[in-house]
Image (tube, rainbow, N blue to C red; front, side, top):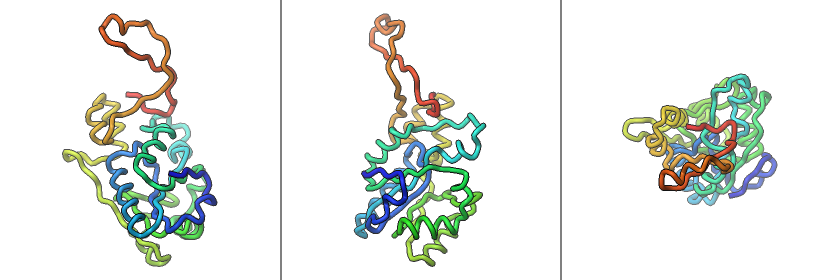
Amino acid sequence: MQVHTTIASVQGVRRPVLTTGTFDGVHRGHQVILRRLNEIARREEGESMLFTFHPHPRMVLFPTDTDLKLLNTPAEKEALLRKAGIDHLLVVPFSRDFSRMKAFDYVRDLLVGRIGVHAVVIGYDHRFGRNREGDIHLLRQLGGTFGFRVEEIPAQEIDDVKVSSTKVRKALVEGNVKLAAELLGYRYPLSGMVVKGDQLGRTIGFPTANIGAVDPYKLVP
């Protein structure tokens, strides 16, 4: 997987098959999108690409909101995406100027004009453009206008629970790490520097580790 931080660096990618979004958690719903992305890219001799943003849009649009905690650090997300086997990860800075871009301009100028998109695969609830004005109907319309195909992936459910980053966060906050792992498709990671503690592990018969500073935006159960 190649990691890019500018749109200019992905120009020339062969027949880009693209998805876009924050993909926080890279949960089971995201994984279905990524598998389909790769299937289309391989079948049509293209290259799969995730177009995502840093920082998270809510951190830019609502800077005083300290409630948002993320499921992945940038390094964790990159590792999960690499494991998913996509060809390209495009991470661009999110800004207020970017948030003001109209949905039509976003598709025409960025996806078509600069990236040269061949196909787009998105989740059932994907919105884009200023004030989230763009939806699947507009995207399909623009696909017909500019010559790219669009495929929508339906909601994924596990035991009647719709998989979403919000549901994973809720499960973790409530201490339900088992449900979180089921929705994610992997055990929730928590990484940080191991620091020396009170050495109480020796009193309970097995070693323990004390984690020091964790990424300030990472959700800690």
